[in-house]
Length: 455
Image (cartoon, rainbow, N blue to C red; front, side):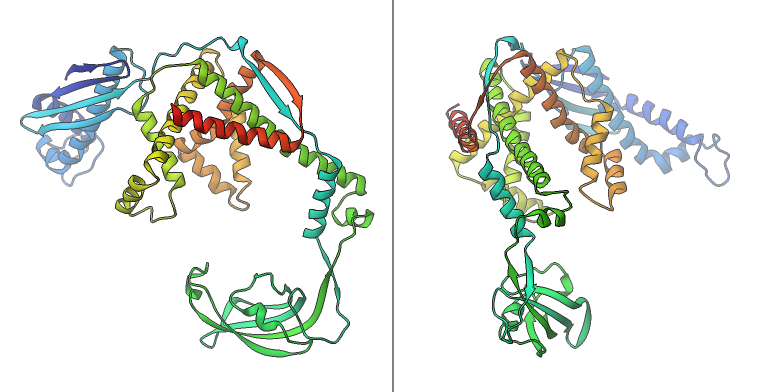
């Protein structure tokens, strides 16, 4: 195998790799000999199968395996002999291949830049914090009360109207056939809530307790059950009772309904929840300000391939829903998405993300920061809890997909590096209102966007 360097730049090197037909044939024969020790062929004992028969039956499949191994070997050799730090998977382009002439291909390796980490001890950053006010807790309690509203029976003999809660029995059919999931008894339906398809709720308006009548509705084209999409259905409905919502009193009984000892405990839990939300905004704002400082302190060229990959990811996230299996449609949407100015802004944002990612990774590498196995397992368990009843499948998915596991690990690693930098920085804490904290976060986001666009 002959490896010749054809390009040497700061962040990119290219090599030409040549393998003679004899080298390829030798590797194929060696692999076939290994294979011949285990495969079975009528009339021959394992290990005694003639090479021509092995080559005739397994030659082509072994050839592909040998060429793949050769590419991997040459890549590792080029990387190790030249002390390279690849930024991404090397790009391979086969120039010529012939069993009699041999193989020639080019190998392009994009490299990580040399990063000189700035002095972290000199960083000064302001941390804005906010605390819940009495009105915030009161408003939260009112929202909880509204979500847990109560109802009372309407004693007046009148027809149902919008806003009422009609307690109904219903039994649905499509084309005269009863369908699973379209029958219920004593179902409380708030008229006007749009919880039922079509004009179902509107048709109950005017009915009285004891009334029975068929309701005709058409399921929407995008209904979740395929067999019911655009289907015309008939529901036999009986109104059993009419109820009306009544304001929920925020008192001790309300606290007990929520499972708390008393109202003070509810207020305490609400305050903690609001504080947690405020702290998240404060952390996000602090981290953004810190990353702005880190960005300004470092100036180096970033690998173009990493920027392109990040840019593609940004565009992919922002693209409208489409058929992901139709690659031509996806590529067309990708290439035409956004205005020229917007795409330039996304490109600058991608470059910033890559740059900051490389700086944080270097800080973590130099200071031996890593994600422990326990932290990673905890993150996977947290993810699994999002899918009740499917925890086992989630665990198996991450066990079989290292890239998915790396996607879980990356944000944990980033947060640990950010915490490490903050420990070395001077952090001035300033208490503000939540409105001021939110406004500051929005202002920094706008300022960053303009700065990115300018770059």
